[in-house]
Image 1 (cartoon, rainbow, N blue to C red):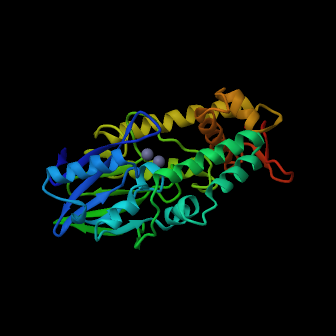
Image 2: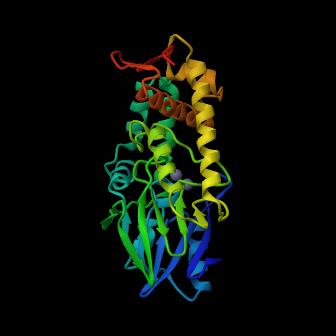
Image 3: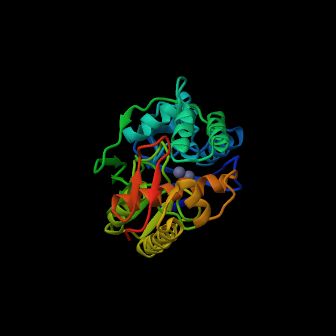
Length: 322
Ligand SMILES: [Zn+2]
Ligand SMILES: [Zn+2]
């Protein structure tokens, strides 16, 4: 569906959750720029292929691919499209490193996740399950190297329009959005969503203080003039500042829950996560809750509100300084 003149939204199915991911096809002089790729499954490929057919095109009309971040739902089909088109692939260098680590032939992404979770005190057996779950993503990703690094502030001409690359670390370390300041459109990837709150957690995808990065990225994006947000999931929306306020409030409330759960003593992050959010740590939600807890703890440690002890084999946190 055309969501704005010359910008098509294609909603592509995902295999793991009962939801879709949005790809955006932007008309260019010599074909289309595709923003994000969906997963490499037959259903997703057919969905994109049939949309291209409906507008009188094929994969070979995709001249350029821009990836907002390397999560499998945004990156997975990239190799498949590249094989069938002349498209050049652009992504932030931090995402390119992580994509290689997670999906490349010799990548050790699952192992990195296991080590990180263990270091923060996640039970070994559950960390091993998380490693296995991460390795399953390889089944829906066709890895390819990028052709160009996207840089913060870089201008991209697409047809008669200019898009500016906005680096928005937080959800992922090299996440980028695209901003057309003339038409006040923001292609937002997973930085801003309406249907849910973008997950922010400490993982090998992120920097050491992803929640601090995310809050800063939200403040930056709030300064942009935007009438239409085109998100990575869900419907387009307006009033990005209201949504940013909601997300800032959501995370601030949860940071205080973590402070409360930590109390005055020294605790492992696993202990804090269970006390703060209570999700079953063996579930997918429990893993997300754990990595989110790490993000709150790292933010609090960076602000000097709590202490972080990295001496032993397991990182521990001590409260009582707030
Ligand atoms: Zn994502
Ligand atoms: Zn996503």
